[in-house]
Image (cartoon, rainbow, N blue to C red; front, side, top):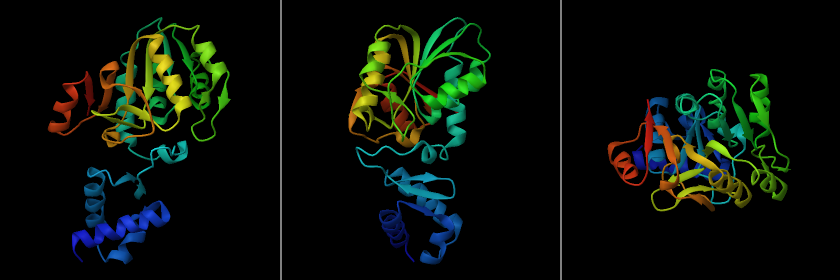
Length: 250
């Protein structure tokens, strides 16, 4: 079977099931798992799917927010490196804002190295994890989103307007030169925008699979924050560095 035929089968299966596993694609294509992994890599490079452990999932629509359980299983090594690097930007006695998101969570174990740290977050999951590490944490009230476990809404905004941060660390669903940083939900976008406004410095944490991905609501231009991501191809890295400061991790 030709490469194009295999890849078309993969994309058709994703349209039907949203998530496909390598072992299910083997009998459909007659190809080995190693060959199919290369196909998935090629399709991800073209932004036609997102690889996950053991398979792939469909690229999300502009307004769709994948659940944390879906995002928690993908690009784990990259997220760990990004989280460790981001935590290295924190200093003792700082007040920092942590956004919701699985990449942000990988910062938390490294924050215990800092003294007298105060963390504000709109993420229930992140707040719970911070408490486990005995890190002083504020969790302002708001409307709880079931998909991301993030607190949003007017009461959250009113509270954040009274706070000031040394640094803010935010996640994103996509970033691109043309569209900047985007997320599916305008309410979460508003929280991110306000956290950036109230912060002296902002870092966006994102693995490179989200490059050229665009969601519904823009919350910042590229130049508004420092991007922390994993190693990018030379061409993409050069283009991004012309627009903003990029910290690439191995």
